[in-house]
Image (tube, rainbow, N blue to C red; front, top):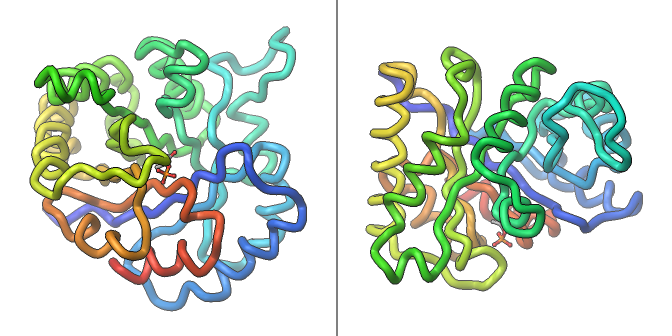
Length: 247
Ligand code: PEP
C-alpha cells in the first residue's frame, strides 16, 4: 500500500486580521514543488476572504472548529456547512485547546467529525497527552483511547487525518524525542488499522507541537509521521515555508 500523501496544515488560532491575508498569499506564492498538501486554517471570520485570496493556488483553507449540529439555536457558533460555504475544505477538530478550554469530550469530537463528513469537510482530528499523563507512563493509553473515542465508523473510506499533539509541546518550544514521536505514531497507526482494517493505513498521521523550520526535517522524516499541524510558525510565511521545504 502506498504511503499517505503528507499534509502540512497551519493553525492560526485566534490570530490574524484582513492584513494577514498577505502572509497567506506569500505562502502560496513561495510554495514551489512539494509532495505535501498544504492548508491554512485561519479564524472563521477570515475563511471566505482567504479562500478568495488563495483561489487558483495549491493552498487549501480550513476551519479550526465547528458545531456538531447542522443548524439551529446555537448563538455564536458556526456549522460545518457554513465553513464549506465560506470556502473551507478541511476542519481541525478536537484540538487540545478545545478539549481543555471548552471541555470537549471524545464523544463531542466524534459528533463534530460526523458533522464535518455530512458537510463534506475533511477532518483533522487532534489527540495528545498532558505532561502528567506522559510522566505517569499513560501517553499511549491516553492517545489510543482518544483515537478510539473520537473517530466514528463513518470515517471509513473518507479522507481524514489524525494529528498527534502532546499538550505539553504546544506553544512551549518543547518537543518529544524522535523515538517518542515514532512510538506514539505507530500506536495510532495500529489503532487505525484495528478500527478501519486496511483503510486505516491510508490517513496521514500528523505531528503537532512546536514544529519550527529548525526541527521540521527530523520530525517530518520520522517513521509514521505524515505531515505536521503547525501553530505559531504558520503565522509567518518564511517559517511555514521553511517547514514545508523540510519535507
Ligand atoms: C497547535 O496549536 O496545533 C500547535 C501545534 O501549536 P505550536 O506549533 O505553536 O506548538
